[in-house]
Length: 479
Image 1: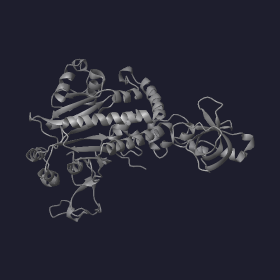
Image 2: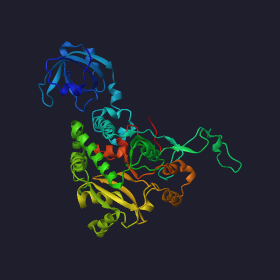
Image 3: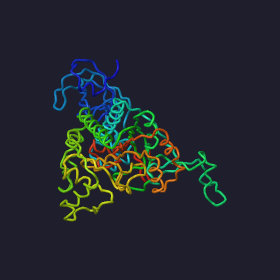
Image 4: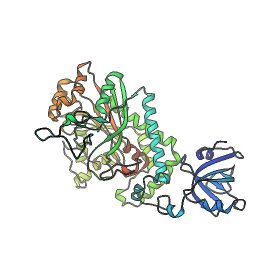
């Protein structure tokens, strides 16, 4: 007889059935009530022991974090909080947990700081909070692949090792197989990359976009979903050195098509979580309400976690130009009363405080801002006819600000070459990208969604380190 997942048992009406459950003990009360969890749901199942019928040596081994196998009968629960429970006939100890050791870990049944939980990232999956977060992270992963597959997209695996810098940022992790204590040099004292593995400088990718464009110009519509890396020495709640990106690219799509696809995609993901993760969402929603109540009134989010997801799923996205956004912000009360920390003027990038004002105060719906100044956007974005702006877009969400960035890509060879010059990008480094414009170049567009940003939005977590299993940040590459 195989064991049954706790999620399936709690949803079952097969009272009277013989069952086997395997999991970890969350609590053991009065030598009688065992709370067991196997990770399939945030909810525990209660197993009730008639302790007089069990060896005391076995009962002494049952404690928090102990792995057990329970045989019994599924019955209607006599207590509150659950519809069914297990009348235990046999208990096997699969793995012991020393109570003294448990007391030193995140598995100790009490509230822990998120910082302490990060220090024990190998164990934090055992907590309710992180169990919920990572089940939802899985759900979003599946939903992303399902969305694109159902729309006829092809998943493209783009390189992790690359010689290109798609963003022109320069903040890259370099890769070499040199002995760093004996790096070969040329006669003029520079590193002799001709002796390195790839015969040239190579880094970890910051984006798969440029390669995805090549796929779209043959397969029509593709998407990437993979790890990306930034060597930005930033210790904030919004930055990671290693994170995951989703980057669709579509041939023949202009900026409007791109906005339509993005809106449909983000609504789909929000709906998917709402429809499939009700128990985890309720727990995280209640947690978020408590967190918000502890903040000063001015810093509280007016919407609960569930309301924020519904806000995205049920509202049409407002579309405005960057120039319109600047005008709205400069006419706003916070600007006139000097409440914004950062200044607002045409030509500068918007900050989170400006983006959240537009979403949460001005329009009360998600916002897409288009047509940004060319100088603050990447070289590959299509130049608009005004010569000052590009066909770019950013999608803004409540509580988080920018969540997606995208654009129509520059398909004109002459303009793209000029953009390379303007951004000091050596044409030799992107020859293959330029080459694609020689053979039936067409309008095309795409966007990038930082996966961890989406997981933050869907779970209410406020630090990006808490939505990826093992965060990589400056000075931290443990686990």
